[in-house]
Image 1 (tube, rainbow, N blue to C red):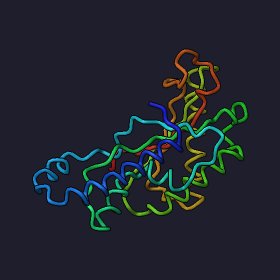
Image 2 (cartoon, rainbow, N blue to C red):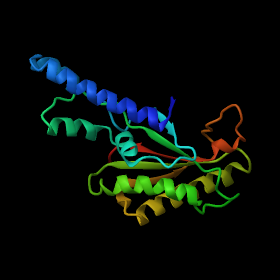
Image 3 (cartoon, rainbow, N blue to C red):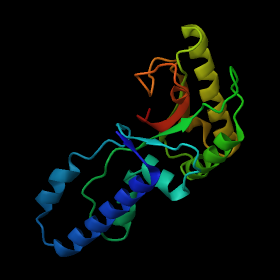
Length: 203
């Protein structure tokens, strides 16, 4: 499922507002009713949603809410509200089509986008959260070459985030080659060259 950053952020804010209103209106709901929802919380790492960043530089608050949705629940509880769960984290897709052919050197636009992710990740140092960086390639070139190139690009992204203050223990870089195209109808499309950043299960 593809969503835009703006609409996803608005949806998160709408859910929080509704949660606050319901909590205020239904403060006498039996504890068992709340416990039933709390017993089956969403897994923040089980992300199926994907946000295409495109050429935009995302907002820090949007990325924070997307990568770490459970923190919004904690903020509600810290302010005296009850949280009935949260949706899985979002996976962000950053286009790698601006990479020079066969190169893993980060283009300037991608660096500006990654600066936002680094700002968010700096605040999660030492928390044990896990984030996976996945490199993808289009189907041009050999399968082995695409796998190597996608791995190098994912590692370049990881190195840049660490350089900007992210905890290296949080980040894992993985290359997928051309095995998971975004445009399945055209495996050679440039939009298949991308880097994805999303949550991974905690170790």
